[in-house]
Structure formats: C-alpha cells, structure tokens
Image (tube, rainbow, N blue to C red):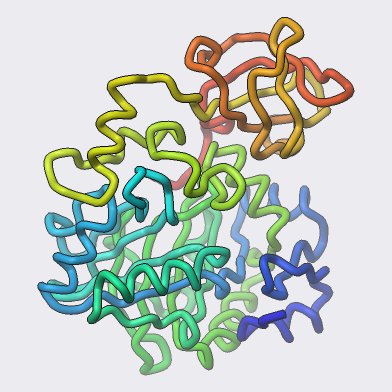
Length: 355
C-alpha cells in the first residue's frame, strides 16, 4: 500500500487504518459518529494527501485543459475555484475535479485518488505542459464551523477574504502553500495544499488547539453523503454522464469541450436514469449495491448508503427512472425490503460552508 506523509502519525495515534484504493488511510480514530458530529459542531482534520494535484501553467496549456472539462476555465478569475468534470467523448465522467485559478497563468487542479494514474495519463496526452505534483503535495482538510479560528491561530490570516469556492497562495513557516475554501463536508472548511515535509508540522500545530481533532474516511463519507455529494467510482464513473449525475447546472454550454455533443444528444432524449436521494423511515440504512424496487419491480441500484448521524435516519442515493426521481415516492430497498422514500438533496441543510 502507498502511504501519505501522515500515515505513520495516524498509526501511532490510534487511527484504524484501511486500504483505500491502494492507500493506507485512517477509517476512524474515536468513532465515526463521534467524528462526524464533532465536524458539524467544531473542527476536524482530514488527511486527503492521497488526492491528485496537477499544475497547469501558461496560456496555451490552460486553453488545452479548458477543453477537457465541462466548466469554463478560461473565464475563471484569479482567486476563484470551480467544480467540474473531465469527460470522455461519450460524456462519461473520467473524474470530477476542483479547478483553482491560483494565478493569471496557473491552475491548480485537485483530482481523486482512485483515478490518479488514469487522469495523469489523460492530462499528459492532451495538455503537454501539465505538471503532476501529486507525489510531492500533501492535502490537509480543516473542516467545521470553527475551522477559520483554527487556521488563524497559526497565523494563516490569508483566509480572511476567502469566500465559498475561492483560493489563495500564501506562506507558512516561510514555505509557499495554497489554500482553498471548498469542502466536502457541508461545513465551513479550508483545504491546505502543502509540500510533503510540511504536512506533519502543520497537522501537529493545528491539533494544539483542543477544539481540533483528527477524523477518518468513515466520517468523511457520512458527512458528504448527508450533503448529497458524489464519491467517484461509487456514485459516478465513466459509465455515467454529468446529466445522469444531476450536475447539469454546472455545465457551461456556450463553449466547445470533449463530450459536449454526446451530452446534447443525451439531454434531448431524456431517456436516462437520474441520481436521486433516498431516505429510510428508521435508522436502517440502504447500502451500496442493493436493489431498489417499486411495486415489486427492480427500478435501480443503491450507489451509496449509510446512517446519517445529523439527520437521524438511513440515507442513500440511487439512479432511478425520471418518473420516480421526484421527492416522496415510496420504494423498497435490499433483501430485507427496507421502506424508503425519495428525497431532495441535500439531506442535511444546516451546514456552514457558505457562511
């Protein structure tokens, strides 16, 4: 398994380690529910150093990269970030990414771990000047309503002007770092992209404040699912288009990009299943891979499911036919026929991410 710069710290400090797509990462420290609720109420640290980072520098490279994603990169102002997806010619999702304009002539692109090799090859083939910084960059996510205070305690006042989906370059201990404010938990949060050798000092310094605690993949999954956010390889992949995944509102149609024609044709037919929230009427949770039934017929499959600690019931997502992808439809899930109903996303609506 591959290790992040913080894997040894996790093992020494009680992290229950798991193999996540070939990476040694902590599943939990004190317990998934406890870490979930602490993130909602205070501030947690997540080691996301397994994620990929790519630098796209120069006007021509930025122009070439712009064609690979459905979001408008050329029009992205300095200091702004944008969610997007790298698409194939069929409109399938090669990977979902966050693109940050960190300078007039430079983008920082954050990608998923499971797709890292595939995306690296794809970008290299289409954007010759791109730099894969994944092996030398650590990523620490500081998440929760108190995350701003935790960052300022370390002198990172550069976060003060940051709004939702913005970014900046700054320094910590005389070392250049990049900070974004996006988040995957629904709470106010900051993502710190730092050189590998700065990861442990930054992690330890953040933990010096008693309100800050480490959290693992388990809580990260329950937090993102309460927000209705997708997990690549589970909720979205190359077999799913942006339209099916419910991300059509993010597409910038007035420009040329890979997969645009396929998406236009798909949109005209509207014959595709749609990613839909499902909610149980108890603590019983739908689970990934379980069949969804309506009036005794299988109509879909659960892609993600768990118990939502902040909403007090089982929650999940499934791809369902358009006529069922509306709130309030009563369905059954799994071999135990758990009763669920379709629900509008997100399940949790009290997050602080936009505050």
